[in-house]
Image (cartoon, rainbow, N blue to C red):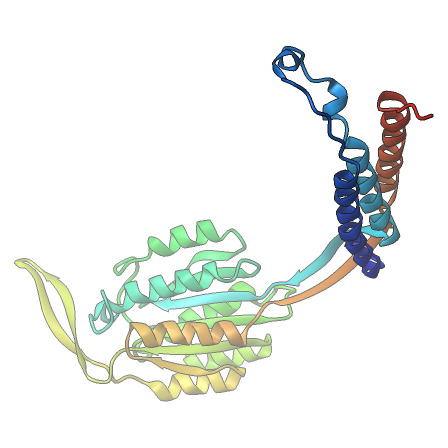
Length: 328
């Protein structure tokens, strides 16, 4: 509730001298009567009139407060907003080749990528997001969807060995582009994450980038891996063994893919850097939201006015009927 004329509320300060005047008059009107004893008076209960003696004054003060509130014009405000959201289509293409098990990111590159990507998905509830995985081949793990709970479950199911090993970057990018090329959404983005160089597949990565550009799809390319060597586990008949892999890969191609499509290239050398990369992409591709607010005010003095009238009527009833006095 708000007041159209709140200045009138300062009139309530007048109650202070009124209360002091009432107390002063009570002291002036005190009368004294000398008695030899009061034992006989204690046997008689107090009259209800004694308890009601000051009620008329309280009712008059309440009426003054309520009428002052009426003068200040209390108003109720009904607010609501209309919000229209334009989501973005985002296809995530993630490398699941053997080198993504390298442990320079914790616990490894693939699990780190899954964890950060899941946080990214949770922060964008209005977007259509899908998932493509690739190694030696490529397939769609989840088509574009706003059901992010399903998408995250499918994210967790991604693992090395789902498809033949290798790094078909062009095939993975082309698959992601194919999944969103017919979407009516104005903003379309592919987040391409890999730690290697294209070494298999029938589609060249630059060709796939040209196709993405044709359909107005931006590609944000992320190269994952430290600058030095990293341990990579592999299964043998006698258990898990480790080999090393270099952090060097074809960054030039990833840069060219991003540049061709109007996107950007990022290098993530550890978990913190990878998280910052996704945060930067999140800022670059903000969902567009248009909000319109409406406000409707209505006068709300009537309840206070009726309450003031009731207080005044009740005061008159008590003063001239219940507590009336006889004067000569």
